[in-house]
Image 1 (cartoon, one colour):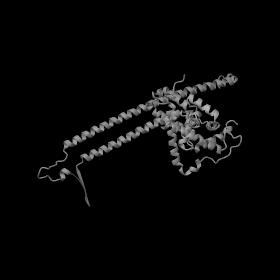
Image 2 (tube, each protein chain N blue to C red):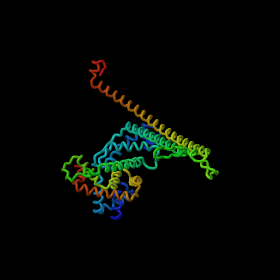
Image 3 (spheres, rainbow over the protein chains, first blue to last red):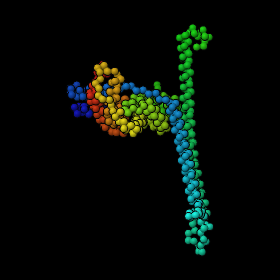
Image 4 (cartoon, each protein chain N blue to C red):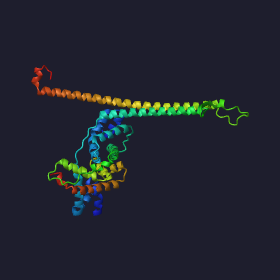
Length: 210
Length: 186
């Protein structure tokens, strides 16, 4: 290994990640090159100084975490429900527009709402384009009906999935609570034993009521 | 023999709350150390840990043991830390002066350990985020360069050169602050 090789692999040496055979060559080079040895020692020293950073600790609150998870699940379900209602409302408007064949006329002193069939005079000749028939409307309605049924089925599936998640979380929360209660009981028993061990005479005098 | 992280994750995703708790207790300390050093803008480390494990819980069904659990956990923690940094910089853009490191002060001969820790934190805060992420995950997360490259989605050579640059810049920062190895073992 020459100086350039050593400089290239120096960071791996600092973190003990050099393969054994390279580490041997690396050490050999440092033994004979004061400049590289100094560079290596400075880098390793800087790394060890990082240990002086304060030792942070954290205690994760699992109970709070499960609650947050359940709340997010509920919020998500509510969002889906609102979306479904909005979609249904839009579909109803679309159906209304498809079926609506009326005409609205706004005059200076009156508002006229009339059906096209009654307002339009009967044509003397058969119309070239008779427009949508009742059968067409029925077909459209059937299609819309199918679409709504599909949407509802999809929403039901989503809702079921969310309920399953919530139920699983609920079970986890219960298990956690049970575990906590067991721990509390153990601690209470320990405190009681400790009290008895510390004040045996009080125990006798008070008839076992600490 | 204690169960592996992978086993605990599998049991947790099957609904075993105790397995998840075991995993949390095993990793909350190392995660806190990494998040505290990544996050130099004052976000609460405990909140960041909480948020990270909440994301782990939500993503546990999608967990695949392609890499170490720690690599996966730290990558989630890194994203949580980056999000928090973005939120805080939006909230406190006009207060930037407050998050600047303290002015250079020569530490007294027998500096208290917490004062030294503050200097180290401030020096880390001086690094560019991309250098800080590498050195913090390497030193405090104890990941290998290969794991770091996978986590950061960078070539291994880039990760190594960033780690070296980070140490060199830290050295110069420590020098400015009058900190040397003697501070650790007075």
